[in-house]
Structures are given as C-alpha cells and as structure tokens.
Image 1 (cartoon, rainbow, N blue to C red):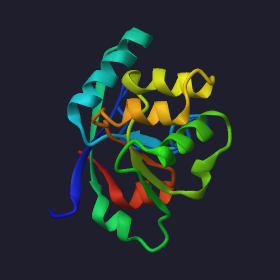
Image 2 (image 1 turned 90 degrees about the vertical axis):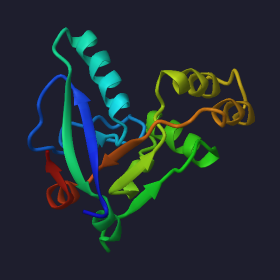
Image 3 (image 1 turned 180 degrees about the horizontal axis):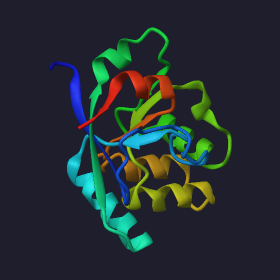
Length: 161
C-alpha cells in the first residue's frame, strides 16, 4: 500500500461521498474538500466545530492514493513544504478574493490556524511587514492541510475508510 495515506476531514457530520460543491472561496486554499494527515489536528478541529455548532464532533477517515494522484498527468498541484513568502502571498491572496487557488486541483501546506492567523491578520492590516510575518511563522511547525479542488480527483483517488 505504498503511496496510500490515511487522511481525516473534521467537522460535525459524517461524509461518505466527499465533494467540492460545499467549499467557500475565500479560504486558505479555495473551495475544495479539506483534509489533514495529522489525526490530532483533525480531532482538535472537530471539537472546535462541535463547540461552534453545538453538535457532536466527527472525524471522517479516508484513504488517499496520494502518490497516484500526484502522478496524474492532468492534476495541477501546489505544495508548500513550509511557511514562506509564497505561502503567505497565496493565503492572503485567496482570503482577499484573488482566487489564486483556481489554477490548481490539489494544494497542500501549512494551516492558517489560531497560531498563525493572528500573524496573517497583522500583516494584512499593515501592522507588521512581510519580513516580520515570515520571521514569526518560520519557528512554527506547520500543521498540514490538503485541499482537493477537483471532483475527478476525489472520485478517483479518495476512498472512505
């Protein structure tokens, strides 16, 4: 089973058939189906959602044929291995409606979570410079998020566990 990883989608509902129809555009990586390969991160996110919606937390488990997906000749991928200038520009651009995500089918990288979002907000409002933002972020170990923006990729490479 080389190239197959377990991934998790956190929330308050069971999702047997993931889709790209329910995503919002001004998220970090655009309106796709979001997952992580870090179980504890998914649990924490599910708890946040359950507190927000007053419902039971749910962590959906899937198998992702990641190696095959990345080798798919039609798949346009973007992977951020760390917090850097490119990641920051991409996140800020998507959050401000520039839709940089629409050039890609699969995006993976750090999460703009509570540890990171304050820095991004300070940068977006001009209270700190790009250099200061990157300096703050480079010492954080990125959590990981995977966003699939193509229904074809979900149908061919993602399977409920």
